[in-house]
Image (tube, rainbow, N blue to C red; front, side, top):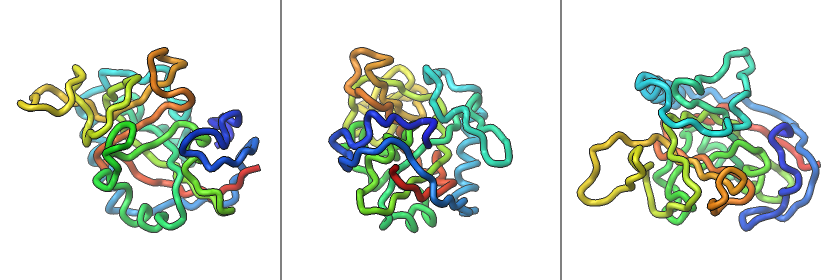
Length: 220
């Protein structure tokens, strides 16, 4: 968490809790065992990998793409775009996410990139969504991004990524190949971007993400 942290942004932003601190302290970590959700995730990951390596690369690579699982196995980012990603959460929804996983269908269409499952490469970004009530929880998830649509602009009111040539849902529908995720770029990498501090990573199919670890932490 501290390797990806950006303390200068702690407590700043519309979605933030307003608490300033310098680093994270991990108190406890649970590994989530959900065979049904894991099987669905692996099937989807393998399906995306079977199409060959992603035709669009995330540049630079995500800060979490260098993470290894505890048994030393690397994630399949080369063939399927699989990454470890952070997701901050409220205590009230922890059990639902552990038992049922994420569900893009309950996402808000008014979100910056529509109704999807949002993830971050920086623990500081995910921490913004964790209430300031003394108990802090964050998931470390697997997310298979496949071929991403990388954009500097917001795209509200969408329920799935555009085609590889950038066409969002319209009439008549396009039969062109479709991207697998949306990545919101930041000004550091694209001066026209609407995002200043953190990139956004969004998938619209719940089988493309799996909450593998739940982290209880403190702000120090």
